[in-house]
Length: 220
Image (cartoon, rainbow, N blue to C red; front, side, top):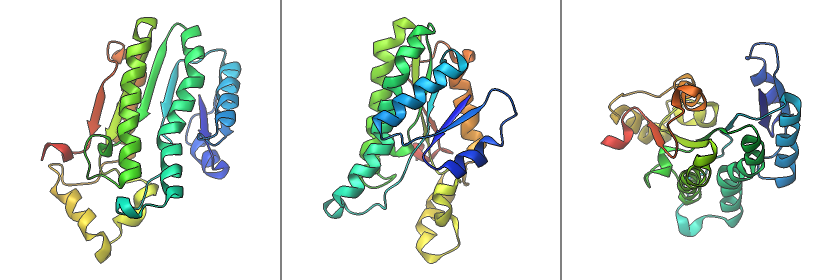
């Protein structure tokens, strides 16, 4: 297994949680085509083949009203959340095809299915990632490559830690979480279980699907 991240220290810390063995880590910016191509090729060379790709890198916006969104913010969010998965997928597909197929799992978001989950840049990027997932599934399904998207709701991660503190500014978020049928934040482990299922052989007849894991957020 290979892990890819732009933050070398965070990547090293994360990789320590995996059992020792054939595990490697590569520092790269997923929005940089050259970085991505080199990282994917090095991974395939190191392991002899490529079978599974999980696109989970992401950044969020600050939900600024659309007419006030700085162009720099738009470009940054779209570059990481949409262009990044495209670049990784584009570089990985020849290796997956050479291996006889494989699985691509894209980490989208509930914001990729409705309009209240983030600002315009994040919402547009995640909607685009859902579309990219479906297109790849359509194009390569007859050659053994599957592509599925996971759409988490409120999941307790480091990325949103500031929203989980008991401050007045965070009360709307706390209220939204409490209003979901599950009534709580989800955990990264719960999302990882779904990703592992979609990456493995037990889901070999599933492709082009979009899975919500949101505690019932979107059914209200």
